[in-house]
Image 1 (cartoon, rainbow, N blue to C red):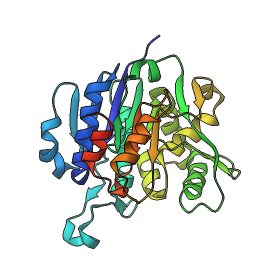
Image 2 (image 1 turned 90 degrees about the vertical axis):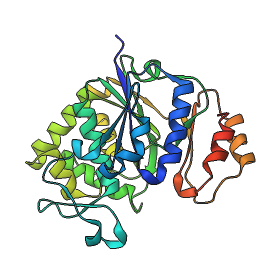
Image 3 (image 1 turned 90 degrees about the horizontal axis):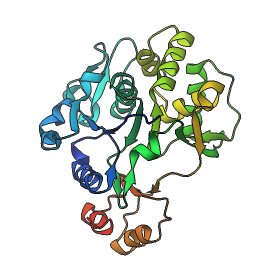
Image 4 (image 1 turned 135 degrees about the vertical axis):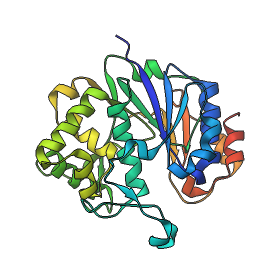
Length: 289
């Protein structure tokens, strides 16, 4: 039985040119999904209003956050950064807010499957999302043994998962579940949220805000891998549909075209991290858009 699939992207004003490229590439190459939900900061809504049409829906992040989490005025924050605050948890920054709203969106929106597509991505080949993400089994992307015990961030996130899920301490090197086209199933996510609430004796948003150092993808991946019921409903794969570039050095047009031209047939998208400051027109040119 085919499951309905929606796409979810979190973005912000500084990435709007990359997001526009993502939308253009999706409109040209991606089929088989019901809606594309775009979640942005409330004060970024006017900048993203032009994308709110057809099956693409732009929403303010406040609609998906608990009421007790409040955005601080910029004059109270360091360097004008966005910081949310609650006496239940302490300060929460934008990256954690994006993770919270992804979970809330998948719990709240009316669909069975959710594919998270960051605005750093661009599609360059036809891709049927229903065929990839809407089948009987949900794809679960994993990089086996990729996290050593001394990893500065991923090891901490993995240990946080152990506490949130009430599981035994992970063995290192641990598996990594972070990728660029990540699919979640609603039933598994609902049970994950209930498990967090049962183990922590508080709501899942409050539990995550208290931990602060966590990864939504590592959390979901660990929950599924440790649950025989949900593991049997997933297809574990080490193959991502997207190639990624994670370095700081900007890429030139020749390198980008080589990445697209030499991509294996299974690759349909390219993720060029915004921290590389690779010019968006070059990425657009290389993707044939």
